[in-house]
Image (tube, rainbow, N blue to C red; front, side, top):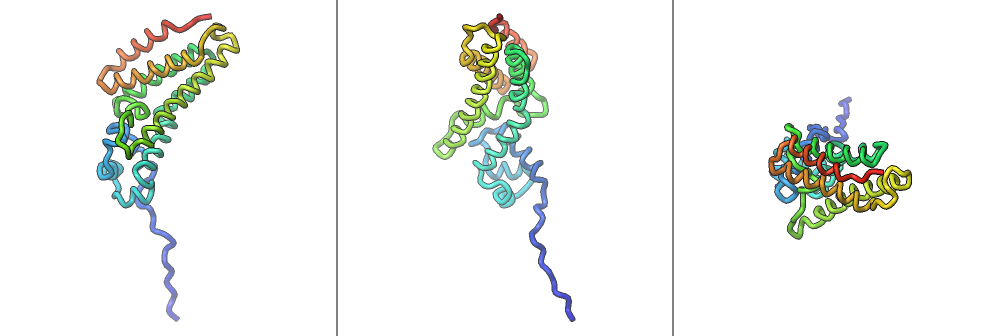
Length: 202
């Protein structure tokens, strides 16, 4: 009796999805959302465009995945910074993290969340709005942390947590822009140190 053949349930993907997503994140980081064409993305990821769409969806969906990876990886310093015991420690850690992340020799300079889609065509508006929300989330995290610092007496009672959060995020994003322009890490750290000298003390 002839043995019945069984078909495989599914073909193996044939590539490391985690590595491909890492490469996509770096490509978006380097070129921005609209500057990253699908053919260039697929090539950078080491896969075909067909495989890219099958595994990650369309370009916007891929960007969202890449931004999540960026948030949990290179930009994770913000989540760690808010755990610092003092408000000054939080601000110091945020700015040091911004300097470190935006000037790594092995990574694109600048910040994916800042320069990824500042200006876009109509088709990129959802990604632009996504990054606006991403930046606003960072601001809100710091604002809440500084509100706690006021309640605990770590910051003067007349401090404005919202203004302080805006100050820190503005300096951090400015650091990212300067890093993308080629300003060196040492100079950017000096800038961060100068910004912190204006920090309110109890």
